[in-house]
Structure formats: C-alpha cells, structure tokens
Length: 352
Ligand code: ADP
Ligand code: MG
Image (cartoon, rainbow, N blue to C red; front, side, top):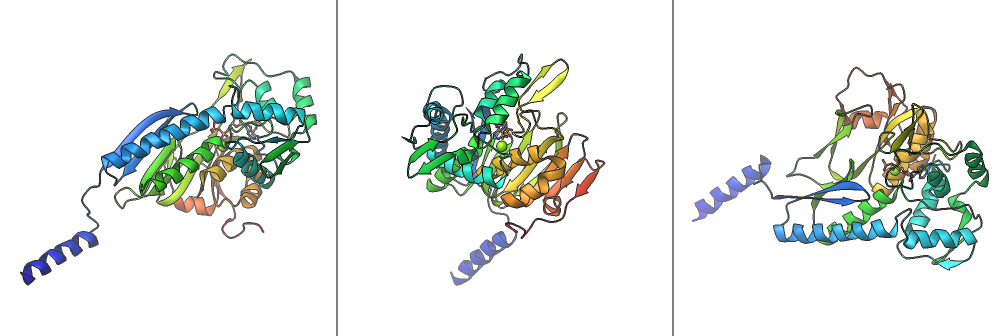
C-alpha cells in the first residue's frame, strides 16, 4: 500500500516537472461589439462557468456600446449636449470614469490623444458607420475647429458633476473606449472565477493567465497589407494594442484620409502607418497607441516616456520600424529585411 502511494506520488511529481499537465478545456466564443468581432478564449474553466462568463461579458459590451456610441442617442449624446451649453450637470455613471481617465491620459500625451475633439471627428465624417464616399471638410471649418481648442481640461469635475468652460468640447471615446471596455470585461471575468483568458477585439487584446502553461502567442498585422509582421508572447496579464491607418479611411481625389486626427493640424496624422504597444492595462495601451501614432517617428519616444509605456513598435510611412529595446526583446520579427531603428530604453524613465 505504502509503495503504491509512493509510486503514484512520484508519477504525479514527474508529470508536474515535465510540465505535461492534462490538456485543460478551451472554450471560445465570438460576438460583435464596438463594430468589430470580439474573440473570447477561456482556458481551464468548466463549460458551464465559461458559458456564464461569456454571456456576462457579451452583455457588458452591449451596454458599453450603447452608452458610448458617438452618434446614436444615449448617455454620451446627452453628456455632449450639456457640455455644449456650459451647464453643470450630474454625469451618467457610465461616462464619469471615462472623463476622469481621459483627462489624465490626455494631459500625459500633451493632448495628442484628445477625446474632446468630437467636432473634428464629426467634420471628417468618421462619426458615421461607413466613412467611404466622404470628402475632406472645408479648410475654413478645420481652422475654426482648431482655433476653438477643445481640451479635456476644459471640463471641470466636481464629485459626480461636470461642467465645460468651452462650448466646442465634444467627447468621442473612439480612441480608448474599446480599451476601457476590455479592462472592465477582464475585471468581470476574474470576478467570475476565470483564471486564463484572452479577450481580442479586432487585434487589440488583453490576455491573462496562460494557455496550458504556455504563453499566448499574439500576431501583429503588417500595416501595408495582409499577413503578419511579428509575433509577441504574452503571459501574466498584459494588453497589446495597435493603431493603424488602415482601420477606417476614405479616399478622395486619389488621396487616402484615415481616422486618426492630429489635433494640432486638424488633419489625419502623417508620418506613421501603425503603432503597437504592450502595457498592463488596455485603457492606457489604447490611448497610447493613438497618441504615439500622432506623435510620429520624431516624437513618439518622449510621449511614450510621459505616458509610462516601455514597449513600443512604430512603423513609419517609409516602412521603417522604430522600437524600444524592451520591445525588440519581446518580438519575433518575421520581416527581418526591414530597416529597424532602436531607441534608447524606456524602462525606469517613467516620470523623469
Ligand atoms: P482603432 O481602435 O480604430 O484602431 P484608435 O484607437 O487609434 O483606432 O482610435 C481612432 C478613433 O479615435 C477615431 O475613429 C476617432 O473616433 C477617435 N480619434 C481620432 N483622433 C483622435 C485624437 N487625436 N484623440 C482622441 N481620439 C481621436
Ligand atoms: Mg486607441
């Protein structure tokens, strides 16, 4: 009997040392949210637990989509009406935290990430389900919208009350709502007892735990066409976000106009094709990918430092890769013939 117990103990030990756990169940689901397909993969939970968690997260996304929709009526629309008239009003509960976190991230990005530029996004026609067929807004309108200089800091937050001192402020959560939503959904998944999952919304994702003890392998899309430019291994709890000029755009007179607007010029940001960042939380990762896209090849490094981002890869309009040494260590680059410029490291420089 004793010998049998010893033998089974040794067998268990070997199994653990060898890392060959029995395969844990993998549960996947796909649904539509924020206009993109969301893939949720849960590992190691019972089917019942995974199904309940998936349903909960799907409902979360539906609520967020309604609350933060930039042009359908709802809490964001009501908020924008009140901000425009300059009255003090109690913020809807789904809006207040995004205003606060948006203010902080906007300041840290030197207002390159600026969710107060809703009128500018409107003018470009990206407040629309299908931007194709649009043309650039008149130059005079762009100049007027720039002069009005809407900033997140124009909104005064007092308890749950908001008031804008600038009637041109119009909130648009397009650049970080998805990230904020993924963070909320991940918190919910964890509360429901899920220990390993990846929540991927059209290539932007947060992954926690692992896939049967092996890190998740994330593919980064090539900005100039189909295929994969690099892969990144993620484990623990991290977010990988990419902003690219290929996501939403229209063409007019042979020129492409994409949806990431430089608040300094009022025009789509130039010089960048895509930016990928890795960061623990998705809200910061999403806002930073947008901000660094606008900052471009010359300025991304200082903005990344101010926003506390260590892992950055930027592909400029000539196809050259700019990245931090921290990112280089994490990446498996498939396009090895591309020119790559390494920046000074960013670890430990935060706030300096
Ligand atoms: P995506 O998630 O589509 O890849 P982003 O996260 O970069 O792209 O967000 C782009 C969206 O953010 C635009 O569609 C628009 O709604 C909004 N936006 C565009 N320019 C800015 C800006 N400078 N600051 C904040 N939001 C912006
Ligand atoms: Mg973004």
